[in-house]
Image 1 (tube, helix red, strand yellow):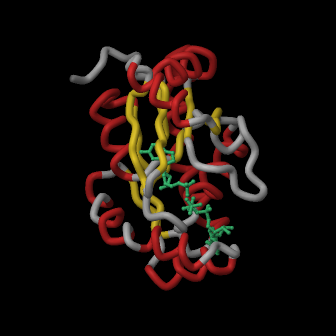
Image 2 (cartoon, protein in one colour):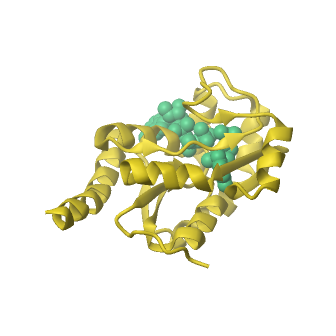
Image 3 (tube, helix red, strand yellow):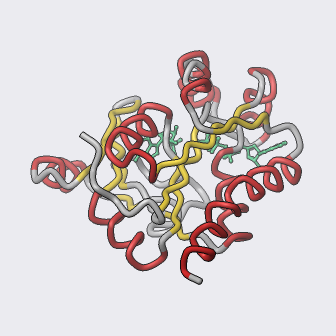
Length: 196
Ligand SMILES: Nc1ncnc2c1ncn2[C@@H]1O[C@H](COP(=O)(O)OP(=O)(O)OP(=O)(O)O)[C@@H](O)[C@H]1O
Ligand SMILES: Nc1nc2c(ncn2[C@@H]2O[C@H](COP(=O)(O)O)[C@@H](O)[C@H]2O)c(=O)[nH]1
């Protein structure tokens, strides 16, 4: 059931197929508009260049399961043997502190957040065609194993496009960030107008 949430508090959910550029775009847009990121918790190992508390909260499986048992996650998923989730309390705290926040989730997680928080959730679906997604992951140096595991979810992820509030084909990075910033800004300005 949808929670009673102040509609001026918004969570922008960057979703879409892996490798489409969601994270890059989310973080660039977040930096441009001074949005705070709600970090996921995960049991997977940190990859080169990733930092705890910046990319994810990297935690042990027993700690994740204990939090799950206590009902702390608003949504959690198993992907390729690893656990990922977002804590309810983190969203509420960051909403209280900042009003506008963002998160990067797969489409299943995005759907669950929408069911939980209704109008306070705005899903921004970022996609690219299959060859581009494949190339971006290979260019980044991801292993063949990781790339094939992710590509197995491509069609399923793409099928979530119509249910999202907005969708962007990410061909040119700067252009996509500009378009998404233009979508988000009116939400923030609406709040400023109401505060006047
Ligand atoms: N428009 C673009 N053109 C070319 N490369 C891009 C573009 N957008 C993003 N990239 C690059 O593609 C790679 C994947 O981007 P990113 O990590 O943001 O994707 P993602 O959708 O979050 O996927 P993942 O969950 O696999 O990290 C990165 O190396 C990023 O710099
Ligand atoms: N439903 C959720 N999906 C999440 C969460 N945190 C990350 N993700 C998505 O998982 C895959 C794999 O991520 P990777 O960093 O291991 O490559 C990707 O689609 C992420 O967006 C979460 O808390 N919930």
